Amino acid sequence: MPTPGDSSTEQARPVLGHVNLMVDTLIANAPPNELRAFLRDTLGSTDPSVTGTLLMVARRHLERTNATALPTAGTLFVQSADGGGWEATGELSATLARSRTFYGAGMGLAALAVLTEVVKSAVGLRWEEDSRMEAVLAEVDEDLTQAIQSAKEEIDGGRVPEAVQARMVHDALRQALLEDKKDVESWGGDFPFGRALPSVELWKV
Image (tube, rainbow, N blue to C red; front, side, top):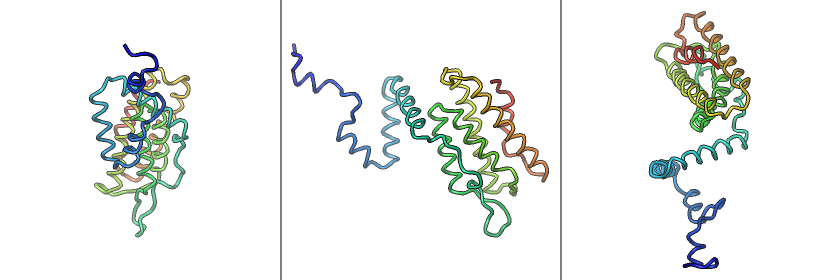
């Protein structure tokens, strides 16, 4: 039977709050796609509680780093060089990726707050049918529906301390969608958020 000072016992006991030097070297140097593969394989082959821990740590990190700051107005879309339409900027791509990080981590309300700013920025834009801009806005519509589902789970999971916070996010998004719908109808376009608006209106907060 090993004694309290037995080196084999100490080596077998995991050290919490510390990343092994070699593992840290792996994390620092492996390509992002390889890290994603490692992570997916790990989560798929371990106890479900590991996934819960990962999400908890992710949420804590995102909250601590102020990642939920809203995008700056006027940076998501620009007029094309020929002045004939609008184009998405790299800032929009980064903003959508950030919103996906939020709702993937179970922070649906934070994701919706960010996506509401995207919807507001779309007011006044014009685009042609089957254009790249129409496709980009369809992606936003998909993100909105995913974030709404994440927000519902966030609320049901008891991670929203005050219901008023959820209502404010819900109402702001609904208002932005209605404003965009009115604007698009004024020039005869197809409303790009046809899935998100019904989802918001059916969502009782």
